[in-house]
Amino acid sequence: MISLDVNYAGIRLKNPLIVSSAGIVGYAHQIKKAEDYGAGAVVMKSFFEEEICREAPTPRFKILKRGYNGNSSSTLYSYEQASELGPEEYAEELSKAKSLVKIPIFASLNCVTPDMWNRMSHLVEEAGADGIELNVSCPHGVHIMEGRALKDEIKKALEATQEVRIPRIVKLSPQTSDPMIEANVVEENNGSGIVMFNRFTGLDIDLEKEAPILHGGYAGHGGAWAIYYVLRWISTVYPHLHIPIAASGGVTDGKDAIKCILAGATTVQICTVVILKGYEVIQKINKEIFEFLDEKGYQSLDEIRGKVTGKILSYKEVDRRRLYMAYIDQEKCNQCNICYKACYSGAIEKRDGRIYVNSNCVGCGLCAELCPRRAIELVGL
Image (tube, rainbow, N blue to C red; front, top):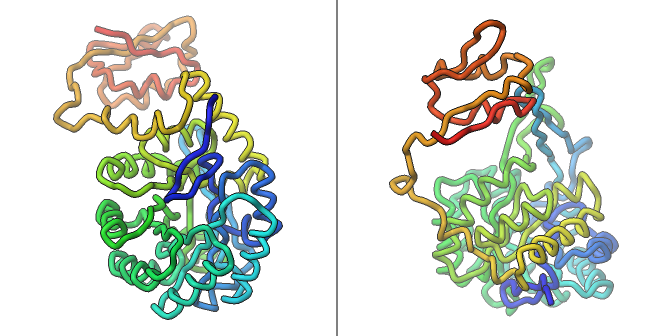
């Protein structure tokens, strides 16, 4: 019998998918909808101590599209602010949600003073929160925008909330030189787990106005492209920690979720994909995770967690021999010249109206990746 359930900071989830803190889970009816479509847990939209952050401007979303050779990448650029609710209202809404759903609900708190960290942690615990996500890394929140030292902010948050009995999980920022340092700070200060990561802080510029787009300031940005950074750091941190890791950033389907677990994640948070595709995508991702386990003959996610970490080579272990060179299938090639323009080794040449590979080929593989007709492949020497 294949099981998707996981133990996350002492809390049993029916599957590893957590809908992360955002407007899609700001109120009880939205949290119920996430449960109805198969979420294993929800992180309720963040409460902010700074009252000005409880009101978002309009518009607040923009999808930025860029790319090379017709291949576009998209970024969800957003200035969605905190929950509109004050302390007591937030706790009341959380309590209402708990009465509607069976899945765990984590409160997300972004406070700046010890008193408010303490007060809110007790309020949400009394309201029935299964755990607390300490959000010191919001890309347009106080901690990041004021340039505070995240190590210190993590310590302050954990110290101020230490009296509660429910798990306290810290959401880390990708905007640091070494996330391992912050991860260690969480574990050393009795944190129950970490989330890797919050969104990046970004800026886009309107060239006509020569000014920032949307609201006129910095904003959070994320999308499918972010997963490679997430995988890199989870796989680095996982072997050294004794607390669970929640992956967050760039997950668009079940394959992405499986990659996160192979790298060492216990749970996988999703947000942008739900915003852009609707709650139904949760079902799809769970189905794809199940199908992967079934196809591979695994019975649980525990069997694959962190499995890739022992296979990551150091720079000294990488095989640097020249083992391949490019080969062009002349029947498929239409002489579009993409490979010819891109080859920096001078290995692509034109003869008699055809394109060929010469002995300068170093086997880098770029031409094969760029060819729109799949007319180029790497062959062994």
